[in-house]
Image (cartoon, rainbow, N blue to C red; front, side):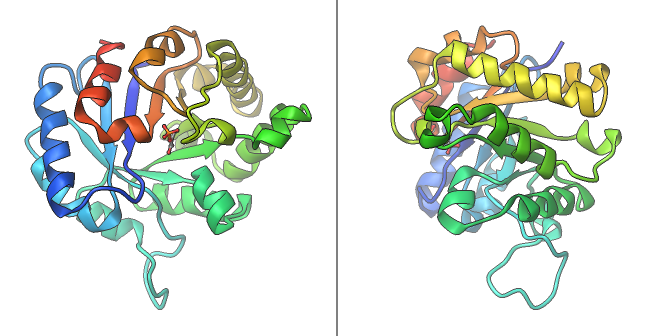
Length: 253
Ligand code: PEP
Protein backbone atom coordinates (compact mmCIF):
# COMPACT_ATOMS: atom_id res chain seq x y z
CA UNK A 1 0.00 0.00 0.00
CA UNK A 2 1.49 3.33 -1.08
CA UNK A 3 1.16 6.17 1.43
CA UNK A 4 -0.25 9.31 -0.25
CA UNK A 5 2.23 12.12 -0.70
CA UNK A 6 1.06 15.71 -1.07
CA UNK A 7 3.68 18.39 -1.75
CA UNK A 8 3.26 22.13 -2.20
CA UNK A 9 5.58 23.88 -4.63
CA UNK A 10 5.58 27.55 -3.68
CA UNK A 11 7.65 28.54 -6.75
CA UNK A 12 8.91 32.16 -6.62
CA UNK A 13 6.26 33.29 -4.12
CA UNK A 14 6.02 34.32 -0.45
CA UNK A 15 8.44 36.42 1.59
CA UNK A 16 10.30 35.96 4.86
CA UNK A 17 7.17 36.55 6.92
CA UNK A 18 4.50 34.85 4.81
CA UNK A 19 6.61 31.73 4.15
CA UNK A 20 6.86 31.04 7.87
CA UNK A 21 3.22 31.83 8.61
CA UNK A 22 2.07 29.62 5.72
CA UNK A 23 4.27 26.78 7.01
CA UNK A 24 2.90 27.19 10.54
CA UNK A 25 -0.71 27.22 9.34
CA UNK A 26 -0.13 24.00 7.36
CA UNK A 27 1.60 22.41 10.31
CA UNK A 28 -1.18 23.19 12.76
CA UNK A 29 -3.83 21.97 10.31
CA UNK A 30 -2.11 18.61 9.77
CA UNK A 31 -0.93 17.80 13.29
CA UNK A 32 -2.63 14.42 13.56
CA UNK A 33 -2.19 13.21 10.01
CA UNK A 34 1.13 14.38 8.55
CA UNK A 35 3.63 11.56 8.49
CA UNK A 36 0.96 9.04 9.59
CA UNK A 37 -1.73 8.61 6.98
CA UNK A 38 -0.19 11.04 4.48
CA UNK A 39 3.27 12.41 3.77
CA UNK A 40 3.27 16.19 3.38
CA UNK A 41 6.07 18.40 2.09
CA UNK A 42 6.40 22.10 1.38
CA UNK A 43 8.84 23.38 -1.23
CA UNK A 44 9.62 27.06 -0.57
CA UNK A 45 12.08 29.31 -2.41
CA UNK A 46 15.73 28.63 -1.49
CA UNK A 47 16.12 31.77 0.60
CA UNK A 48 13.30 30.81 2.98
CA UNK A 49 14.19 27.12 3.35
CA UNK A 50 15.98 27.48 6.64
CA UNK A 51 13.29 29.62 8.27
CA UNK A 52 10.54 27.29 7.05
CA UNK A 53 12.43 24.16 8.13
CA UNK A 54 12.94 25.64 11.56
CA UNK A 55 9.24 26.61 11.84
CA UNK A 56 8.37 22.99 10.95
CA UNK A 57 11.01 21.29 13.09
CA UNK A 58 8.50 19.96 15.61
CA UNK A 59 6.11 18.77 12.89
CA UNK A 60 6.13 15.82 10.50
CA UNK A 61 6.01 18.05 7.45
CA UNK A 62 9.06 17.67 5.26
CA UNK A 63 10.80 20.47 3.39
CA UNK A 64 11.95 20.23 -0.20
CA UNK A 65 14.00 22.36 -2.59
CA UNK A 66 12.72 23.53 -5.97
CA UNK A 67 16.01 22.71 -7.67
CA UNK A 68 19.51 21.45 -6.95
CA UNK A 69 22.87 21.74 -8.67
CA UNK A 70 24.68 18.76 -10.16
CA UNK A 71 28.06 19.31 -8.49
CA UNK A 72 28.77 18.93 -4.77
CA UNK A 73 30.77 22.18 -4.34
CA UNK A 74 33.05 24.66 -6.03
CA UNK A 75 33.05 27.56 -8.46
CA UNK A 76 29.41 27.48 -9.60
CA UNK A 77 28.18 31.00 -8.88
CA UNK A 78 24.54 31.14 -7.92
CA UNK A 79 24.05 27.39 -7.55
CA UNK A 80 23.05 25.36 -4.49
CA UNK A 81 24.38 21.89 -3.66
CA UNK A 82 22.69 18.87 -2.10
CA UNK A 83 24.82 19.22 1.02
CA UNK A 84 23.69 22.83 1.46
CA UNK A 85 20.06 21.80 1.07
CA UNK A 86 20.47 19.04 3.64
CA UNK A 87 22.23 21.45 5.94
CA UNK A 88 19.22 23.78 6.02
CA UNK A 89 16.72 20.98 6.66
CA UNK A 90 15.62 19.70 3.24
CA UNK A 91 14.76 16.10 2.61
CA UNK A 92 13.36 16.37 -0.93
CA UNK A 93 14.50 18.07 -4.15
CA UNK A 94 12.45 18.68 -7.28
CA UNK A 95 14.38 17.61 -10.38
CA UNK A 96 13.28 18.69 -13.84
CA UNK A 97 10.21 20.75 -12.96
CA UNK A 98 8.67 21.84 -16.24
CA UNK A 99 9.43 25.50 -15.54
CA UNK A 100 13.10 24.57 -15.30
CA UNK A 101 12.93 22.43 -18.42
CA UNK A 102 11.00 24.92 -20.54
CA UNK A 103 11.84 28.34 -19.08
CA UNK A 104 15.43 27.76 -18.00
CA UNK A 105 16.26 25.15 -20.65
CA UNK A 106 17.24 22.10 -18.60
CA UNK A 107 17.84 19.01 -20.69
CA UNK A 108 17.03 15.39 -19.82
CA UNK A 109 20.74 14.84 -19.27
CA UNK A 110 20.94 17.70 -16.78
CA UNK A 111 17.85 16.41 -14.99
CA UNK A 112 19.45 12.95 -14.71
CA UNK A 113 22.54 14.54 -13.16
CA UNK A 114 20.33 16.41 -10.70
CA UNK A 115 18.57 13.21 -9.66
CA UNK A 116 21.97 11.60 -9.09
CA UNK A 117 23.28 14.63 -7.17
CA UNK A 118 20.22 14.59 -4.91
CA UNK A 119 20.59 10.88 -4.18
CA UNK A 120 24.34 11.18 -3.60
CA UNK A 121 23.66 13.97 -1.11
CA UNK A 122 21.01 12.03 0.79
CA UNK A 123 17.98 13.86 -0.61
CA UNK A 124 14.86 12.23 -2.04
CA UNK A 125 14.34 13.38 -5.64
CA UNK A 126 10.93 14.18 -7.08
CA UNK A 127 11.48 13.66 -10.79
CA UNK A 128 9.00 15.71 -12.84
CA UNK A 129 7.91 14.61 -16.30
CA UNK A 130 5.16 15.81 -18.61
CA UNK A 131 4.25 16.80 -22.13
CA UNK A 132 3.62 20.20 -23.70
CA UNK A 133 0.18 21.02 -25.09
CA UNK A 134 1.32 20.57 -28.69
CA UNK A 135 2.87 17.22 -27.81
CA UNK A 136 -0.43 16.00 -26.35
CA UNK A 137 -2.32 17.33 -29.35
CA UNK A 138 -0.04 15.45 -31.70
CA UNK A 139 -0.36 12.22 -29.70
CA UNK A 140 3.19 12.34 -28.41
CA UNK A 141 2.41 12.17 -24.69
CA UNK A 142 3.57 8.57 -24.23
CA UNK A 143 6.71 9.16 -26.28
CA UNK A 144 7.70 12.31 -24.36
CA UNK A 145 6.99 10.88 -20.92
CA UNK A 146 8.83 7.65 -21.77
CA UNK A 147 11.85 9.60 -22.98
CA UNK A 148 11.93 11.91 -19.96
CA UNK A 149 11.53 9.00 -17.59
CA UNK A 150 14.15 6.75 -19.18
CA UNK A 151 16.68 9.57 -19.51
CA UNK A 152 15.91 10.96 -16.06
CA UNK A 153 16.55 7.57 -14.49
CA UNK A 154 19.51 6.60 -16.69
CA UNK A 155 22.21 4.56 -14.92
CA UNK A 156 20.29 4.27 -11.68
CA UNK A 157 19.92 0.88 -10.03
CA UNK A 158 16.88 -0.51 -8.18
CA UNK A 159 17.97 0.71 -4.80
CA UNK A 160 18.28 4.29 -6.03
CA UNK A 161 15.02 4.30 -7.95
CA UNK A 162 13.10 3.14 -4.89
CA UNK A 163 14.00 6.46 -3.21
CA UNK A 164 12.46 8.51 -6.04
CA UNK A 165 8.98 9.96 -6.42
CA UNK A 166 7.79 10.64 -9.97
CA UNK A 167 5.54 13.65 -10.59
CA UNK A 168 3.51 13.54 -13.79
CA UNK A 169 2.81 17.17 -14.64
CA UNK A 170 1.31 17.85 -18.05
CA UNK A 171 2.79 21.24 -18.90
CA UNK A 172 -0.49 22.51 -20.38
CA UNK A 173 -2.15 22.01 -16.99
CA UNK A 174 0.43 23.81 -14.85
CA UNK A 175 -0.74 27.17 -13.58
CA UNK A 176 -3.35 27.36 -16.33
CA UNK A 177 -6.46 26.24 -14.43
CA UNK A 178 -6.76 23.37 -16.93
CA UNK A 179 -6.53 20.06 -15.10
CA UNK A 180 -5.99 16.73 -16.81
CA UNK A 181 -9.14 14.69 -16.36
CA UNK A 182 -8.70 11.89 -13.82
CA UNK A 183 -8.80 9.45 -16.77
CA UNK A 184 -6.11 11.33 -18.73
CA UNK A 185 -3.89 11.43 -15.65
CA UNK A 186 -4.53 7.78 -14.76
CA UNK A 187 -3.61 6.70 -18.28
CA UNK A 188 -0.16 8.32 -18.04
CA UNK A 189 0.40 7.21 -14.43
CA UNK A 190 -0.31 3.65 -15.44
CA UNK A 191 2.10 3.98 -18.37
CA UNK A 192 4.80 5.23 -15.97
CA UNK A 193 4.23 2.32 -13.59
CA UNK A 194 4.33 -0.13 -16.48
CA UNK A 195 7.60 1.36 -17.72
CA UNK A 196 9.18 1.10 -14.28
CA UNK A 197 8.04 -2.49 -14.09
CA UNK A 198 9.66 -3.23 -17.46
CA UNK A 199 12.93 -1.39 -16.75
CA UNK A 200 13.21 -2.62 -13.14
CA UNK A 201 10.61 -5.01 -11.74
CA UNK A 202 7.01 -5.14 -10.63
CA UNK A 203 7.85 -4.99 -6.92
CA UNK A 204 9.61 -1.67 -7.43
CA UNK A 205 6.87 -0.39 -9.73
CA UNK A 206 4.18 -1.30 -7.19
CA UNK A 207 5.98 0.60 -4.44
CA UNK A 208 6.78 3.70 -6.54
CA UNK A 209 4.79 6.82 -5.66
CA UNK A 210 3.58 8.83 -8.64
CA UNK A 211 2.16 12.29 -8.00
CA UNK A 212 -0.06 14.22 -10.36
CA UNK A 213 0.54 17.96 -10.77
CA UNK A 214 -1.28 20.58 -12.83
CA UNK A 215 -3.92 22.87 -11.34
CA UNK A 216 -4.76 20.44 -8.55
CA UNK A 217 -7.17 22.12 -6.14
CA UNK A 218 -9.68 21.27 -3.42
CA UNK A 219 -12.50 20.57 -5.86
CA UNK A 220 -10.62 18.11 -8.09
CA UNK A 221 -8.21 16.49 -5.61
CA UNK A 222 -10.50 13.68 -4.45
CA UNK A 223 -11.38 12.59 -7.97
CA UNK A 224 -7.72 12.59 -9.01
CA UNK A 225 -6.65 10.73 -5.87
CA UNK A 226 -9.34 8.11 -6.45
CA UNK A 227 -7.45 6.84 -9.50
CA UNK A 228 -5.55 3.61 -8.82
CA UNK A 229 -2.15 4.87 -9.95
CA UNK A 230 -2.30 8.41 -8.55
CA UNK A 231 -0.52 8.35 -5.20
CA UNK A 232 -0.27 12.01 -4.43
CA UNK A 233 -0.35 15.54 -5.75
CA UNK A 234 2.29 18.14 -6.49
CA UNK A 235 0.39 21.37 -5.93
CA UNK A 236 1.49 24.80 -7.11
CA UNK A 237 -0.98 27.70 -6.87
CA UNK A 238 -3.33 26.05 -4.38
CA UNK A 239 -0.47 25.34 -1.97
CA UNK A 240 -0.04 29.05 -1.34
CA UNK A 241 -3.33 29.26 0.55
CA UNK A 242 -3.21 27.22 3.75
CA UNK A 243 -6.96 26.50 3.67
CA UNK A 244 -6.87 25.17 0.10
CA UNK A 245 -3.79 23.07 0.73
CA UNK A 246 -5.33 21.66 3.93
CA UNK A 247 -8.56 20.88 2.04
CA UNK A 248 -6.51 18.97 -0.52
CA UNK A 249 -4.71 17.01 2.21
CA UNK A 250 -8.07 16.19 3.83
CA UNK A 251 -9.20 14.41 0.68
CA UNK A 252 -6.65 11.66 1.27
CA UNK A 253 -6.89 11.08 5.04
C1 PEP B 1 3.56 22.90 -10.11
O1 PEP B 1 4.16 23.95 -10.03
O2 PEP B 1 4.21 21.85 -9.96
C2 PEP B 1 2.12 22.92 -10.33
C3 PEP B 1 1.51 21.77 -10.50
O3 PEP B 1 1.49 24.15 -10.36
P1 PEP B 1 -0.11 24.43 -10.38
O4 PEP B 1 -0.72 23.53 -9.32
O5 PEP B 1 -0.25 25.87 -10.06
O6 PEP B 1 -0.60 24.06 -11.73
